[in-house]
Image 1 (cartoon, one colour):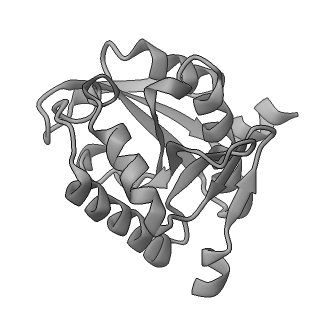
Image 2 (cartoon, rainbow, N blue to C red):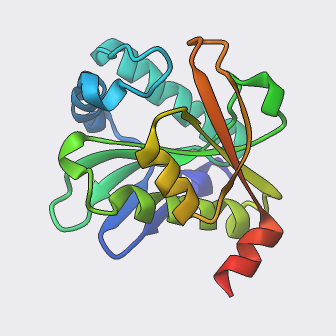
Image 3 (spheres, rainbow, N blue to C red):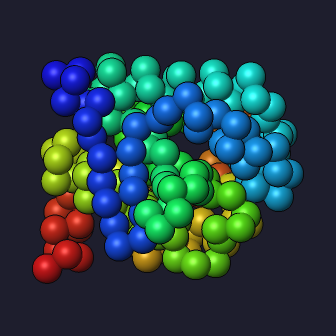
Length: 186
C-alpha cells in the first residue's frame, strides 16, 4: 500500500501534483522565506531550509499514516516547483477535529493566475473521490481575502470564526461536505 501511495500523482491542465523529492527542499525553502508568502501562516514567521525540510518530512509521514497529504505542486510546462496543496489533519486547531483540511501555499510569482484554485480543486476531488472523505475544512486568518476567495470557488462556506491557539490570530473555518461536493459537480 505504501508503494501505491508513493505513486499518487494528479494532473490538471497546468499542474502536476506529486509526492515530495529531495530537490524540492531548496525551492520550497525559498517560498517559505518570503515574508509576503508567510504573512497569513500561523504567526507570520518565515521558515529556513532546515524547518522546510522538517515540514516536508512531516508531510510525507502523513501520507504514510493517513493515506493523504500535501502534494508538491509543479508547473507542467517547466517542471518548476510552485508550492504545495493537499490534505492534512489540522491538529493546530483541536476544536474542528476530527477533520481534514485542504490547504495550499504558492510562491509569489505564481499568484493571481488561478493556480491555487486549480491545485486545491484537484486535492478536493482526490479527498472526496479517491479517499472517501465525508467533509473537508479550510482555515484562513481573518483578512486573508485571497484564500477565502479560493475557498468560495471550491464551493466551501464559512462555518465558524475562532482563534488559532498556535499563533493567537483570528481564523475563519470554511467547510464542504461530500454531499455538497457531489451537488456542486453535477
